[in-house]
Structures are given as structure tokens and as C-alpha cells.
Image 1 (cartoon, rainbow over the protein chains, first blue to last red):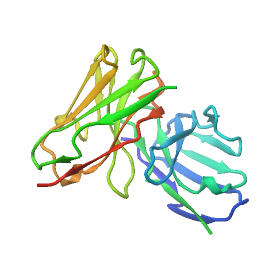
Image 2 (cartoon, helix red, strand yellow):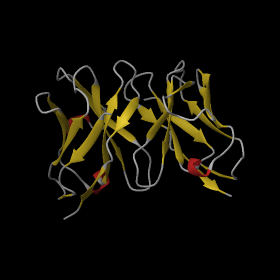
Image 3 (cartoon, one colour):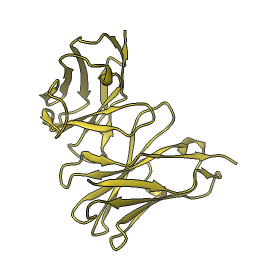
Amino acid sequence: DIQLTQSPSFLSASVGDRVTITCRASQGISSYLAWYQQKPGKAPKLLIYAASTLQSGVPSRFSGSGSGTEFTLTISSLQPEDFATYYCQQHNGYPITFGQGTRLEIK
Amino acid sequence: QVQLQESGPGLVKPSETLSLTCTVSGGSISTYYWSWIRQPPGEGLEWIGYIYYSGSTNYNPSLKSRVTMSIDTSKNQFSLKLSSVTAADTAVYYCAREVAGSSYFDYWGQGTLVTVSS
């Protein structure tokens, strides 16, 4: 199985900050990486797929980059509604696997 | 707008079989892969497997021996059965639509908590 490791696991930031979350894969997955946002008690929401393609309706302050084994999710200017947990997911092959999550909290 | 809704018992006894159904509305169940994903309380996400509208399946090897998925295209529903459950199977279970051939999930159900306890 492909292991995904996110860093940091916990991040404290303020409204307006620029934040970056990293996801590292245990083997190369080309650009087959997705990012999700999950708020408490809710299902995950797809933000980005294919490493850098923004899902329809997702604000442009979210962006993704990377290929191979290292990927990043960047939020350019944090908004109050962005405080949530973020997961990466590889869609290079089966079994599909997720990172352990990064919890983003208000400083 | 596509919507998914999980249904089934919220409490299952140890060693019994967990059974859930996902009803798809606002779109056809055909031409997509339909997955089950679970999340133990306070933990991360685990993909359980998918079923294609044709009935073909792909299960996570970690659960393969206990998982069975089925689909009823006439009702726009698909189902999950997980046998011989233990407390470790306590989780929120989500159904999700997998973009065909792409293996990421664009629509999710709201999730249903299944607790394994006697």
C-alpha cells in the first residue's frame, strides 16, 4: 500500500495568514493526489484533484502543487471558514489511501 | 445535484454483520464507481472498497475477507456488508461517488455512525 504522511499534524494560524500543508508519499504517484477539507460532523469535501486542479466551486485561495512523492496544499489568505481538518488522498492505484490529516485551528 | 444518503442500523453486536445501504438521488448510478469509506471516532479515513454499476468490485485487502458489496441499479442503491464485526469496526461510514477512472471522490453522503457493542 502507498503510505501518505502529512505535516504538520496540527497547525495554528490566524485569519489572513498564508499556510502550507505537505503530503509525502511512500512511493511515486505522479500527480495522482487529491485534497479534502473536513469540518466536525461533516463529510470530507473535495478541494483539489490531480495535485493542482481546483474542484468546481472551490475558492481560488486554495492551490495545490507537487508530483512524484511530495505535494503541498496552500491557502493563500485564511478565512474563518477554512479552519478544519485537511486530508490528502492518493488516486494513483488501489487500495486508495489517505494521509492522517492536518488539523488547522485558529490562533 | 447528486445526493447520497446512507441508511442502516446504528448499533451492531460483536461477531454479527454490519449492513448499510446508500441511496443515490439527483443522478444515475450508472457509469460511476461507488465507494464506502469509514472513519473511526477521532481518527482518519479508510477506504473500504468500491462497486461499479456493472457489479464488479474492488476491496481493500485489509478488509477483503469480511466485505461484500452489491448494487441495485433499478433502485439507484448500493450496499455494504461487513461480517464478524468487532469494536474496531465502530466508525462513521460514508458512501461516496468515485469519478470513473480517476479514483477520487466528488460526492459524499453525510455519513452514519455504526457502533459495535453488545
